[in-house]
Length: 293
Image 1 (cartoon, rainbow, N blue to C red):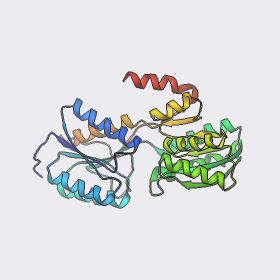
Image 2 (cartoon, rainbow, N blue to C red; image 1 turned 180 degrees about the vertical axis):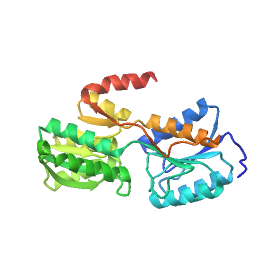
Image 3 (spheres, rainbow, N blue to C red; image 1 turned 90 degrees about the vertical axis):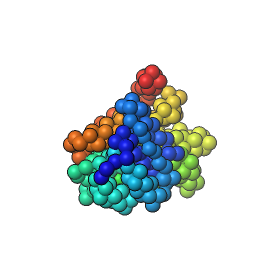
Image 4 (cartoon, rainbow, N blue to C red; image 1 turned 120 degrees about the horizontal axis):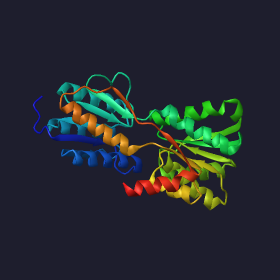
């Protein structure tokens, strides 16, 4: 394919109103600016079909390579097909596509989800002393990270030192703060009194905290992502723990790999950014460090 501009990278977002995805997208933009590259950004507004069409248009416009934050497996298959047909290198970031999609000029940047839920559940178990009751808030049910993080919790709680923890209920709140609040309210209205709320991400955890405050209870609340709002909630003593998923590093690496492939270089198919546990005592220092960058 002859590209109209070898200096333009396409960024296809599934949505821009999700705080964590916005961090990744912002990092891609910052990395592109630092590298002197132009960036063509699209927003699918949570519509997989629109994301496919956005990618189709970016390819038609002649981008040198693509960075795609996926979200729908079927859409990812079609996006990869379009990219391969046009010989445009493609980097999926954060939402890992199926194995059939990856390889050659289609690569992935993300974090190993076996680490995320495991770190979260181990610390929650420690704080609970290995006994009590918990509910799980699941992200989007079709998202691999949501499935893996939930499985991680079950695996950890099956260990001898955590078997005293009973999971009362688990339901999806779609990564969303308002839905997280509504879900804990529904659990409480149904008579559940969990000692801990384990959320697949910080946004749902923060919603649960709002509901808990209004109900006059203070369960252990665990999140994942270590967003700015989550760190503030930890400093305030509301959020018990989180797990840092480095969205900035994911975005920066995604852009760098897209740049390298556009220049004809080969890169690894799977590229991992490690997770790390963030306890309440770590939050203030991490927030201060982030503010300096």
